Image (cartoon, rainbow, N blue to C red; front, side, top):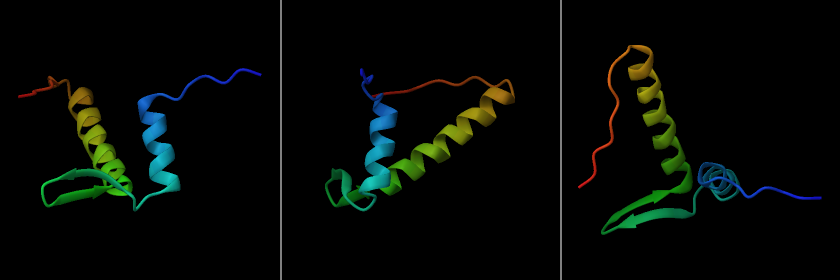
Length: 63
């Protein structure tokens, strides 16, 4: 029986469900739990879906 590896999204969701209040991101005094991170990802994906459905451009900017 072969199992395929999890995608990064699936792995993040798994941890967010099993350990929602564990720290996921720390930067200085800012701390995000896995649940908070997953919630923010869902918000952003909703905004992206809206933009795509409205025919507006979607891009990614990094410094």
